[in-house]
Length: 280
Image (cartoon, rainbow, N blue to C red; front, top):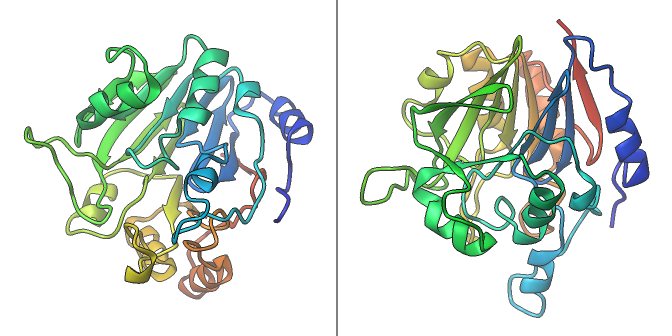
């Protein structure tokens, strides 16, 4: 198993070291689709998975979730968080063993979810159903000093409930002078590029593990699609995710980096626990 670039105390020290008086945007990859974004003193945590719950769940089954990279940090040690998101109900995006310690350590945190998933989230977390802040495609809400814009994702499909509310979501956030897009898990669908193009996105987190029927899980963008989406929508910087976590469902980020270089698309491949800092 690979060790994260920064782990435990070293990761927390890097988190504490950033200059909160500047307009720099700091991002740490926490593995899988988890990203911690900080501008000044505002901290937004996207879709964290910081446990071994899936490895234990699927142990001794025909679909083992063998970890490739160690955990970056104990979620109970992540404090000072304003918002945490869950883009959909899959455990690597809605993990009880990750979210309960985060909620306990950050009593004033906002939990942002797709409104269609409210009952499921409340049952999994055994929390008050009124606790999460729900969004649908096209909605906007204010939380943690940021404006959140809901954008439907297709994993594999644009799945909705009986009221037409989307179960899979991405989030565009406006945080100070920065605009950030977290896709959640998604494949391409008609209109996604046009809708993203309405925003001037400084930083986007896009999956690159693609899809394969033999995995028996929902698919995502592959490396070529992720780069093409970023290029067509004028994204300033793209960071890939959804690799280096589970052996059966990963991708080689070198292919993404090569495609980004070929298309002249600014991109950064992070290691688990590594920070990216963007300047104005």
